[in-house]
Structures are given as structure tokens and as C-alpha cells.
Image (cartoon, rainbow, N blue to C red):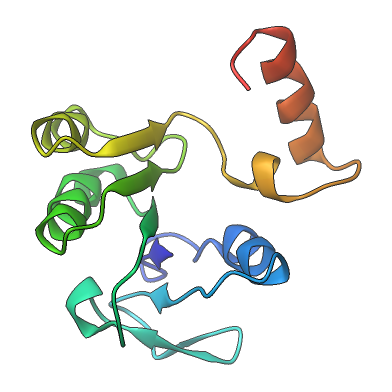
Amino acid sequence: MVGHSAKRPFPRLTYGALKEQGKVVFAVDPSTDEVDGDPTCADLDSLPGAVDAVVIEVPQGESAEWVRKAAALGVRDVWLHMNTASEEALAVARDANLRLRHGTCAVMYLKQGFTYHSIHRWVNRLRGKY
């Protein structure tokens, strides 16, 4: 889970929801030492092991660089949180042949029950985009 809390709040909802589902999740944030009591890594290179996927929720101007870093580490699945994907990030993902998800909020897929995220889920189902 990549965030940059010095520039926008760390994606705690996504981070927490993944952990609640029993996923092994690492917080990556170059601007803080901890998130919710967990230590952070400053970069993907600092992770304690290989990862299967990366969820990126950083300012749009940083997204392409994080996609490049994920691809360089061999990560094939990348999710760019809604409003974080730049045209450059999309091109980098396409050129690296990544399985990219973008344009939606990961939390609407992770959190069950009635929340404002479930409204997004319901609307996207109606639109055939869920």
C-alpha cells in the first residue's frame, strides 16, 4: 500500500480493509515512519520480501514513478486509486504489460455492509463497471 502522507492522507481505509481480510500488507510512505502503529518502508525496494500487488494512492504527479518502481520489482498487479492515475502512469503500466486497475476506489471492493463506499459499488454495478 503506497501513500505519501506529507502530501495527502495515507490511505488508511484501504490499508485497514486489506489487513482485515487477512492479507499481508506493507505500508510504503516516504514521509513517515509509521502508519496505524505499523512501521513503514520509504520505498518498494525497502520491503522485507516480494509482493504480489501494489495499491498506489499518491498525488497524481507521483503515480508514474511508483508504477515504474513496481514494474522494476516484477510486480504485475497494480491498482491506481481513483484520481491518482496520470496519462504517463497509464502509459508506463501499458508498456510494462501490467495488470492495471484504475479509476475506482479499492475500498468499495474491500468493505462490506452499508457505507458510502457501498453506494459507489451499487452505482458501478448499475453501470456495469463493478
